[in-house]
Image (cartoon, rainbow, N blue to C red; front, side, top):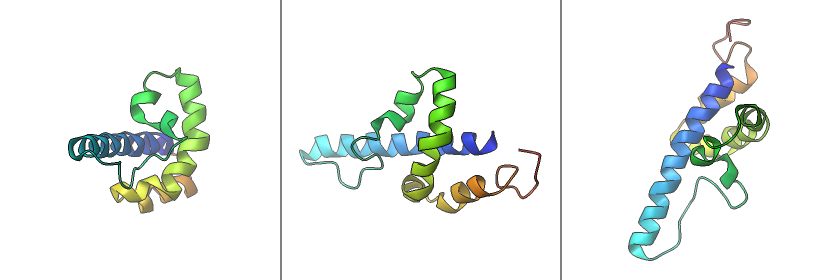
Length: 100
């Protein structure tokens, strides 16, 4: 459960960074550079997930978002180490099995 919350927080931050990049791109009339969400991953944006059924969101975050955030997106927010730890340690990366 803790790891899903970690992924959701990372996805929320990445969505904010994507929105900022889009606004900058529109302001200067250029493309979005270094977007956190690549084409085909827009459904993982926080703004999209909040309109998703809770069960679907849970499965999506458990499968797709976890892998996406841990391998690519978390580096955008400097959280890569924490996200990777949450995915590999029982108890949500706190090193305390059974409490996550």
